[in-house]
Length: 121
Image 1 (tube, rainbow, N blue to C red):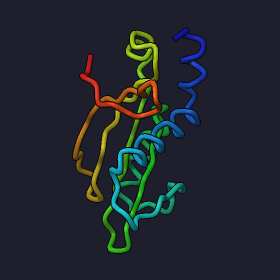
Image 2 (cartoon, one colour; image 1 turned 135 degrees about the horizontal axis):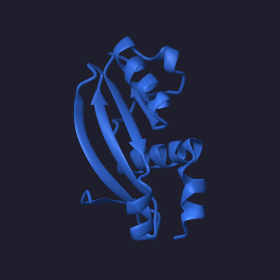
Image 3 (cartoon, helix red, strand yellow; image 1 turned 30 degrees about the horizontal axis):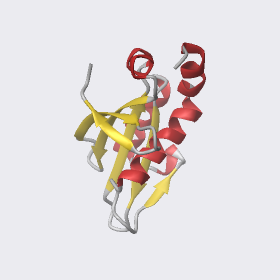
Image 4 (spheres, one colour; image 1 turned 90 degrees about the vertical axis):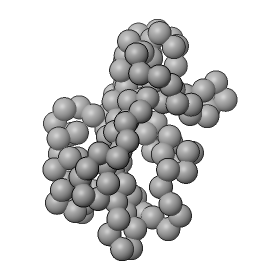
């Protein structure tokens, strides 16, 4: 995949779309949750993490449930790994409602549109 194409995909709004696609297609958040797109509507601890993501050029997406549990994901698209694989790669950190990191991983968009876990380079 050409660097210019990857740079266009890397634009935060495009990475936002890829992040949401990854989370929703993998069923990472439970049924009955709702997405929060306005940073000001997040619980304070998650607001700070989302603000950090915004300031560092990362994408974020958050889902909450009715009892206050949260799933915040912060992602970046590392160009070298994406270039090497010829497909978008997302490095994703998953935080709980308490702001504690729950999981970190790298995902690559498969040829059929399915996201696959990949080893960190």
